[in-house]
Length: 193
Image 1 (cartoon, rainbow, N blue to C red):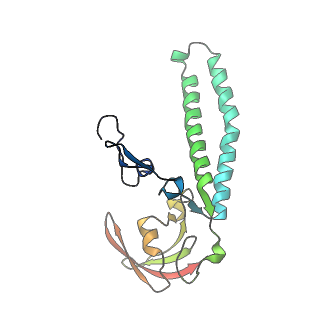
Image 2: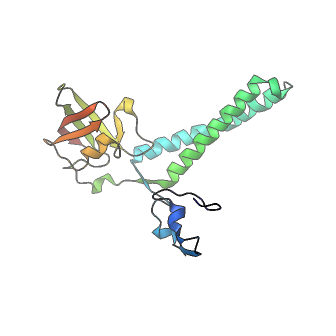
Image 3: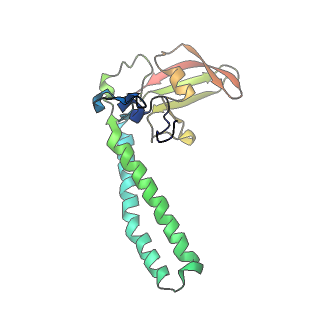
């Protein structure tokens, strides 16, 4: 970027807002409603939103405990060599970062009305039974939104390579997924909501 101008990236909402030729003095200000990505909604299930709210409540309840730990450690004297104080401050920083992240996700969360989904095809919220065509192993996967994903529970994002490949498919369809270890082939065995 020229001196004095900020660098931008594709889809940068600020760059889109201030589009035009700033060097020539031609700046077109677009209303926020026309900005892509300025405030994106995050699709979530009702259960997912409840879980995020519960986690936020638990974290907010921890703030006074950590604040007390900081105060207690501060009373022990020299802060430069007080490991308890520095550990408590670090805990508070990480807690505040997670609280901020959860608040942001909750403010953008939109609960998907699963009754409006075509249940004959795979869409957000679907529980899918997949057969790996190579190993013949059958696994269940649940397509979820950001903040709900958990690989250990087989909950994957609709935007993940597997999730994106599944969208719109129906039982009996075969899908190909590009993965770091090569192309994977699955057969959709069943869908549930």
